[in-house]
Image (cartoon, rainbow, N blue to C red; front, side, top):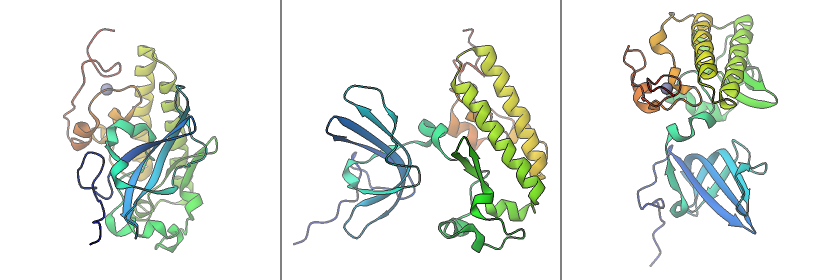
Length: 245
Ligand SMILES: [Zn+2]
């Protein structure tokens, strides 16, 4: 009799491929935490996770970015030690993509983007936005083709993403309510600019205002309402809430 391969997570629920999972391991005083997207089961029954971020702490110290496990690296671990992680909990770590990439192109993403039909023959690197040496996002090749984004516009779009990274970094660095509100307004203006560059209507209802750091408004509920005028505001949100701080 062979042992059935476990396909359940630490909570006993069936692993759902494509979902986010996290686990941590202790190793001679270091605690490493890894969060990533589950991809497949290996032949030996391990779960392959593509790393979104990894942190590490020494003894009782605080977690810091783990330089050994980089974003994009694939690790295979026992399913039973993985806990589900929800997107809104780690929203600020997720690589930004303009819009969800359609399924038929997701498979292609593992090949170089160059192999896609591409009017301007952009390479992966040309679509990648980097700031301070870090990958900020990769512009969606499907949309770049669809909206016929030329090289000049592509460069301007990339600059808006660097601007976004700067605004978000500034928001991470302050708890001043007026500063946060000012920066959130700057992000709102930036989203209008991005809509113009993409050739989309100037539509505030499509803005991802809830993505800004320190915003405590519900992410999923508001993402579902994109395109409508309805917004769900957390009263205690320092940026959008009504509570006096
Ligand atoms: Zn908010």
